[in-house]
Length: 423
Image (cartoon, rainbow, N blue to C red):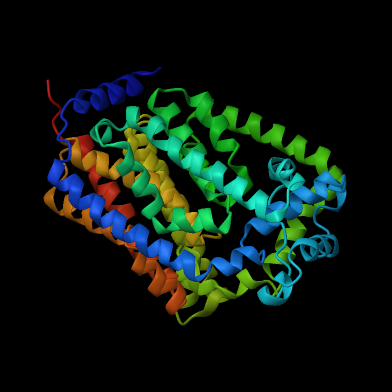
């Protein structure tokens, strides 16, 4: 451990003892607000419950991939015709209602997770995957409470209520997506870094490469941490070799082309939802009158700027600083190529970090504190997502709130780093 790490860690540890826990009155108001959001989420689920029984959730792609591997057809994992035949076997009207095949476009190694579930019917496998995700979500309080002392005394029911009331997490659960799994892996990495276990953090982040667009920008922010980077690369190499065993080297080499063609296939539903992409790419390409192609240089420039800022914040604050981790994760959401509503589940961890900083006596300026609170209220407001996404198809407007949250955390990190520390 070098001198900078020792100083950074000592400053963090010195401020941990100044805790101003949420009062019982505040906890009660917070619980009522979150319960109201969860109620609205459940109402939406009730109105769309028939879509689950018809095999329309995103879980379809994972179940399809599991079936292909179970039939020992790994080399045909990215065969659209085979995928379509399998989907027709458990969801006869799925392709018709959806308007297209829902292709499995994730890396080969992730399909291994769903081979055991493919032994069951689609409905049973969906419920089992939902139970697994609920278990991962319920494990977060036990994983994060020791690392977030300001939230340590909050009752467990409030932690669970917060997770279920956060619309992106709820959407990920109902869609059968893998975003909660990625949130869990990031939480493991966060806890490891707080204990200065950089190698373990690198492995945890590498296991999240099934959503590489939400992993690689984060790694860039911590690329200067050699131990983390080396273990990340070693684990990533292991996943690469595992993928090659599944599809063969020919199939693995063809995978990027498959993803690229799927990305530009107008028949696939997600390619018609640019307005529901709350990141820099979605916002610039849909809101500016210059068009997606002409806006590409601006997208690249803005993304590089965010990456540079996150890297600078990480290097300046040190790997153990929770705000540095939160800044890198929010920046990752902004620059990712894809960011659908369920991908915003990752914001749950930065929001917990921000709330912990608010109640832990950090030297935030009043404007920083107020802005963070407003951002948290917006992110936890289910009607915001329902109106922007379901009513108007303009969820990319939420990018502005994410940008404000990003720069507010950055400002808060600067004020914390420069504030006088207690003796």
